[in-house]
Image 1 (cartoon, rainbow, N blue to C red):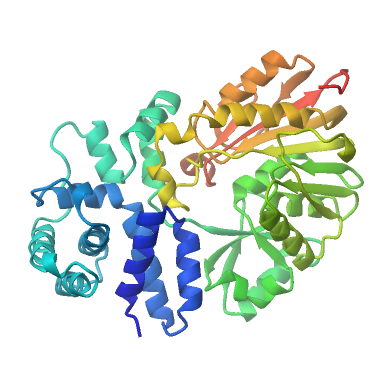
Image 2: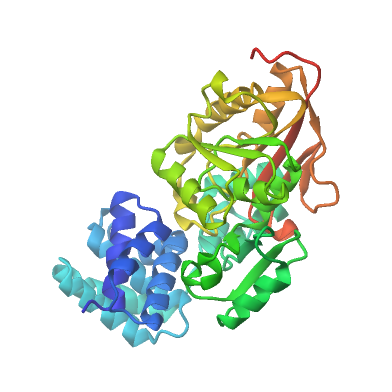
Length: 445
């Protein structure tokens, strides 16, 4: 039987070598490994997510005691040392001796026996000296980067875009545990009804004051194993996505297009807000993701959600037009680095082509909209190049559209009619929402 640390090591190595998403890698391995008990599963998850999230902090501290650049270490050795350093620096309940000795054992068992003495020596120095920060000004990018484990280029982007205080608070917030928020399926139950069902399953939940018909889970295991989930009484959806649908304002009997829909949460919420009346066409470019939408709609008993395989950047006249169009485009994801820690290690080059794709999708989306309809553009990133700049370009080139205020009264960072939700201001994931209305124009694109 594999130990919890061996399991965590294998997951981290996969993330490190293959660029796998941490949540998918963890879920895949833990689903296959049925021998681990609940405590081991929790430990593996904490170790994998924490080591990934704190990689910049950990790598800086390891580098202080290594003669060679950390990137020159063999992948197996690097994963082991990162795990060990993370336990020493950020897992208070793990004894120092266990963190060091188990790391040495992992080295011997995983193609790194030659470096067992190095692992032992470096980790003992980490344990002795604790979490060390770079010298210099407390407000320097280098020190802030190591302190909060956010790349300097992202910090600089946030400082230039939102100001120093917001940037620091965004970095701090990204290290806090992400809340599990669920949307009540109002076609099948009520807030109070779902609370009772969850309580009977040993799950603690509270009503939210951020957006109606949502609950925050305070104590739960695997959400997918809950009877309430299997019976379609809720779906998992952060406040930000629910607010996005609220900005779209779908009404009973309308036709709604969700152009980049998978896994379908916004389409599901729209269908519920429409009381199951009308049509929600949910599009995605990948068949596997279309099936996610289909399965989710079936579980939630939402027959008016219709999944389609479609490229959001390509117009298809056969789909007709809609009263409301939601355009939640592919983005860099800088607003959800607290949920998906590996996102913070994207580079500027990785995301530089996104604004053009986003603009093309937005321009295509407008061709589906009826007169006086509403078009909502959204991302889960905090990057003006993908947010405000795309929207301003759209308004400049598509003069038949005007922007309208988004969710007046909701706390957030605002520029004109546009709304940026921030974790420390809005209590949500980082998210951008803009709304446009079509005024007296033709639909020939």
